[in-house]
Amino acid sequence: MLSPDVQARPAGPLNPMLSTPQLQAIATLAARRAGEHVLANLHRRGDVNSVLRTDVKHKLDVEAQETATAVILSAFPDHAILGEETCDAPLPESDTVWIIDPIDGTINFFHGLPWWCCSVAVRFKGQAVAGAVFIPEMHQMYEATFDGPALCNGVPIQVSKTDRIDLAILATGADKWDLGEHAFRFMRKVSEIGQRPRILGAAAVDMCMVAAGKLDGYFESGIYVWDMAAASLIVERAGGQCEILKAYPKHRMAFLATNGGVHAACRDALLPLLNV
Ligand code: LIP
Image 1 (cartoon, rainbow, N blue to C red):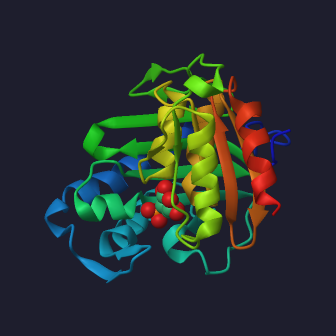
Image 2 (cartoon, protein in one colour):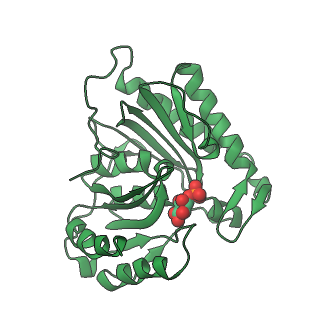
C-alpha cells in the first residue's frame, strides 16, 4: 500500500481557484528558472559555505531556492514553501505546499558531474498534484500531474517492463547521516538481489531514470521529502510504484521507487533490514 506521502491523487477536489495545468506550469517554470540560474553560474561551482565529508553547503543551492521561490510566490503569494535550504523554518498555514530541492545532487554538482537537478512539487492537502524535475546539464525536463502522463521534454515516458529482480538495474545511495555498517547492509542487499548496482548521487535524477525506463528501481535508506516529492509523482504517472518503507522525523525516510515489476522483490529484501 502506498504511503499518503506519495499517493498521486488529491484527497478531495482541488481548490476551484487553482487549476492543475496552472500549478504544473508554475512548478515547471520554477524548476527551469532555478536550473538556469545555476547554469549561468557554472564558474562558481566552488562557491560554497562549507564542505563536509558527507555534504556540501553551496551558495548556489540557496540562490536557486530563492529563484524558484520568487516564481512560485509571484503566482501564488499565500502558498506555503518547504525548501531544503530553509527546512527548519516554520511553515505558514496553507492547504497548498510547494516543496523545493534547489540542487539535488549537490556533491555531484560541486565536483563537476552533470548528474544533478532542480526539483519542484506542489501538494494540496498533503497529496501530490504536480511536479517538475529539471536536469540542466542533460537538457531534460521531467513533469507530471496527478491526472496526466509523465513527460520528458514533452514526450510521454514509461517505466521498464523488467520483472526479474536478478536482471534488474537498481540505483541506491549513501545516506548522508549513516555511512557506517548499517548503511552498508542496504548496499550489500541491493547488490545481492539485482544486477551490479549503481550509486549515482542524486535521488530525483535516479527516480526520473526509473520513470523513463532506464533504471528498474531506486532505493535509499535515508532521503528527504524534497528529494522525492516531484520525482515520485513522475515515477507513478509513468506506471511505476513508490513507497516510503520507513518514515523518520524531520522529513527523512527510507524510500523505494520501482517499475512495479520488481517492487515486491525489492521491498521483501529491504524491509527486514529497516527493522533491525
Ligand atoms: C542528496 C540525494 C542523494 C542522497 C543524499 C542527499 P542533496 O540530496 O540526492 O542521492 O544520497 O543523501 O539527500 O543533498 O544533494 O540535495
